[in-house]
Length: 548
Ligand code: SF4
Ligand code: SF3
Image 1 (spheres, rainbow, N blue to C red):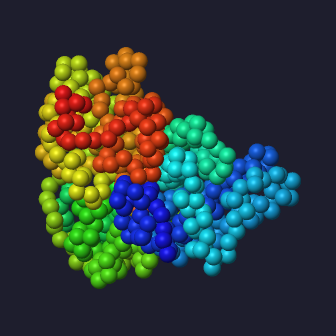
Image 2 (image 1 turned 90 degrees about the vertical axis):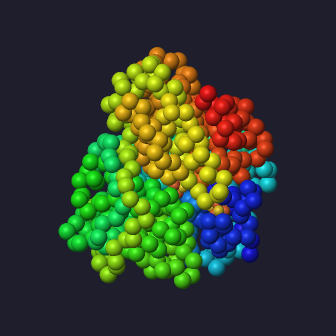
Image 3 (image 1 turned 180 degrees about the horizontal axis):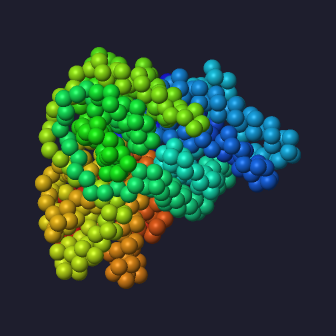
């Protein structure tokens, strides 16, 4: 059977994965995800109609919709059985909502999503009819998918906030509106462009919600040196983005003789006062997600995925039986740690016991990296930063936030960072930083030349910093600041970050290493004309035209 997916930067041939995902996604998984998204859009359409009729908010809708969106993000979930069960549940929920609508005399839109109700045995067969290519017009398809990918990214962020007890129904209403609107057959390109910006605004709110959840729970990130070597005790490596999972694991593993290490996007956990206080949170192991095949071998202990990015291990990989998943992530054969009951905690005892049977990690590097430059920390240094700009010691800030990935062409970002003039400062967030956060780039009067705000969602911090600088310099527009945006993207969280920046009025963002395959030529034209979006070329040419 075939498949079609073009949601990430590594889409095959720069067009789309049609045989098997470059990420490892099998056609069956892709089909189940298409069906899950279609069913989820149906729930959004019906729930929105119910809400418009004055029905009380249905508490059964928000969490599963957010989880469904999150689990279809690139590299989050490869477990067909889990995804199929989510489809069953989503269709069951929709049936109940439709029954409720009929009871209340609510007239539902005549959309295919509402009528959709296949039996489990039919899921794969119907996928083609409801997948990406079911929308024939390539521009409408491009805009609709960009909106869905943005909503997926926002879903990831609100799920982390939910896990910390921070909910905002208004954000969900916006996400649901976007899902319902893209289900309309008659929606035009202009409406879709406006909806794209509305999703960007929703992304700003989702990142702000998560920022508030993180900082009110764990304190404001502060400048922190993170060890990248290893200790002598067995370790557990925690990957993904969910701080609540990490906190519960730290709590449950305290005093048990194991060390906890962060991996990839979990690195910024070290910057939070309420997490760095655990003495057995000993360091960060390895690099960005795509190097996990070698790094999980040498880690020698269990690995817990709280979210993306999972690379399915090859048959015979030594670490295959050491992988655990939780939350929206999943991998066939891996033990999945179930959700917490209301008011309860997850049970990580199996992971801890597993670690105690393992050898300590093999050292792959030594030293320290410095981070923790989220908005509160940078604003505490604001006077110093403003003075450095006024005196000319800092000529330009270069935002290099986003994702890393395996393409060779991403070597550009390491070279770009290394070649930047010494009076420039890199502002970063997301796993893109691994391309340059171990380079000795020095500092400017005590301000490090790489300021890491945190995870990809902490791109929000970079916006807060930019807006504060705009105010400090009395500028009319955020685009008048000496800031260049050189964003590297991979998955859909980078899409919501990009849409959020556009919604905030940031212009002339450079996006690489390649522009999204889901952008049709006409939609690319709109992004170029309206927002000044551009690609990248060579390090020398880009530095010459953007920085010098
Ligand atoms: Fe291909 Fe990316 Fe989709 Fe995976 S997520 S199937 S690599 S486009
Ligand atoms: Fe990285 Fe997957 Fe996007 Fe959260 S972990 S930035 S790629």
